[in-house]
Length: 317
View (spheres, one colour):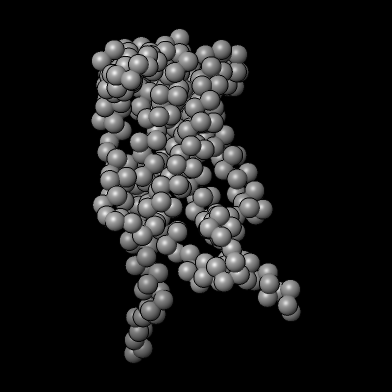
């Protein structure tokens, strides 16, 4: 009588089975909570859907109507205006703070903690705090300005100052990017600076030819994150111009009608889920295209030490 021996698994097979087993919950969660809603919203973007009645297929009408809608273009304009100020300022201020806090100064760890802590505070709490600070009548900032004889602006209640006010609020959270910059600065070999000193390079020359090139991967990383976060601005505007602020969402005079706020209004105030879904996919495609272009451009300005070493080795061969 021949007995069939049970098949035994090799170590690699057991490891593969364990990997599939451990990743299954994440895959299920991704399908249910991420991929599923994304595909559903893609379908809704081609329908007329008001939540109450079943969706009705309308093709590209939602996209066509959006491109004819002046409020849609106002939201695009406001978002680009905000991004053109907040994104470069956030990158520059975070980098400068990291360089300063990388120096050997008294209380270095304390200063790092002080500048990082604001970035971990919730967005709603920060927005409410800034609404109070920027109040043109009783706010602390205008009160201090009046003490030195300066009439402060209307801030969030003035169409000309509303976006600069939001940019000022965004600088509150630069500590997150600062920490990433700081980690990158500490990873630069000190031997490079010592060799540059021997060659007679001054502080500015060392900063320009060593610090900045070696930090370009970190700058690129923060640029991508900043781009995504900037174009998804919502919480601060919602709180500052809603019930916690002026009580006029997107005001005054639609000067703070950012893209995501108009998307929210379409979805949850006008109950036009088709238009809201179309806006979500336009934003997704825009960020995707810009991100791809940034990755393509990184070949010309982002310095990777390993890639440079390989190029030198290939030239020597």
